[in-house]
Length: 169
Length: 169
DNA sequence: AAAAATTACTTTAAGCTTAAAATATATTCA
DNA sequence: TGAATATATTTTAAGCTTAAAGTAATTTTT
Image (cartoon, rainbow over all chains, first blue to last red; front, side, top):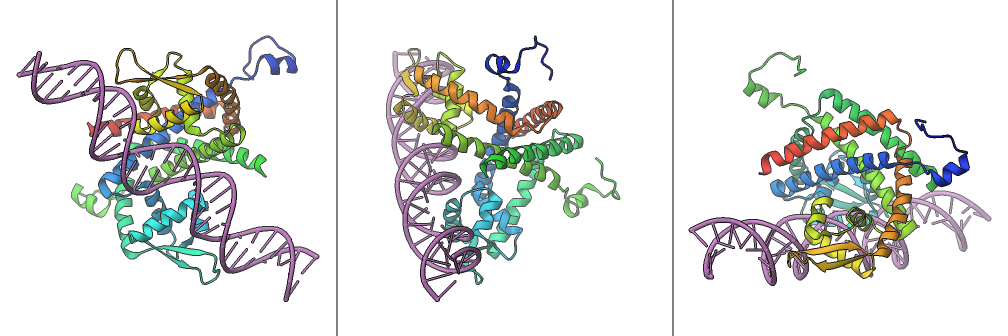
C-alpha cells in the first residue's frame, strides 16, 4: 500500500520481505496498558474503600441488571469467564450474604443466582462511587475524544470478533 | 460545560442533580471488553500452538529487549505486576530452562534474570507468529483508524496516570 | 420409548495474582 | 561508626482463573 521499495514478485516478497506489523503490536500493547492501569486502580480502590474484589463487583453488576436473577451459564457468557470460575465466585458471595442460589423451577440442572436485598443495596452504593472514579480516570479526554474512542473501540471489537469467530467454527 | 438546564446553585445541584457519568462508564466497559477479548484469544493460541502461558510470554518479551538481563524489580515495574508474583513466574521459567537467575555482582540483594539461548530462540519463534495474530485481530481497522486509536489511547493513558498519581502521593 | 447427544453445573489440578509479613542487604544520617 | 531507614526479594495466605474430567438432567434421534 504505502510500500515505496523496489517491486518484487509475490513469492520473493513473502520470503524476504515479510510484512511488518509492529504498528499493530504497539497499538495492542497500548490498549493493554490502558486497560491494566485502570483495572488495577479500580481493584485497589474497591478493596480499600469497600473490601470487595473486582470479580465480585462485576458479578453483582450483572445481577443488578436482572431482577429475576440469572443462571450460571448466562453469567458465564456475559462476563466472559468459565463456568467453573463462577461456581467458586458465587459460593463466596452466598457465604457473604450478597447473593442467593436456587434450582431453577424450569430446569433442574440450572441454578438461578439473585442479589439479596442487602447485596443490592451494597452494590448500588459501591457502583455510585465507582462511576465517579471512572469519570475521573477519563477526565482529560474531551467529549469528542470519548465519542471517537468509543467508535474506534467498537470497530476493534468487531474486528477481533470476526477473526476469533472466523476460524474456530 | 454543555449543561443547558436551568441554573441551580452549587449545593442544590450537587444534591439533586449529580452529574451523570454513564458515558464514561460505557467507554470503560468497551475498552475492557476489547482488551479481554483479544487477551483471551492470545492466551488460547499461545497455549494451543506453543504450550506457553501469556505471563511467561510477557516476561520473556521483556527479557528479549534486555540482553544483559533485568532485575526482578525492573521486571516488576515494566510488567506492572507484584514482586511476589514474579518470584514464582521466574521459578517456573528457570525450571523449564527458558531463563536463568543469578545474584547481581553490584548488589547482593538483587537477582538478575536473563533469557537462556534456547529460551531466546523459542521466544522469537513465538513472537513472530504472535505479531501476525495481533495484526489479524486489528485487520478491519484502517491505517487512519489505528493512528487515531493510538493517539486517543495515549491520551487515556496520561489521563489515568494523572488521576492515579495525583492523590496517592 | 430407548439410545445418543447436548446442556448445566461442579470438581480437580495447576498456575496466576495480590497484599502483607518476613528476611537480607544497602544507604543515609546523626 | 552505629542506628535508622530504605530497598530487593521471598514467603504466606487467600482468592481468581482456566481446561479438562466428571455428574446429572434435558433434548433429540432412531
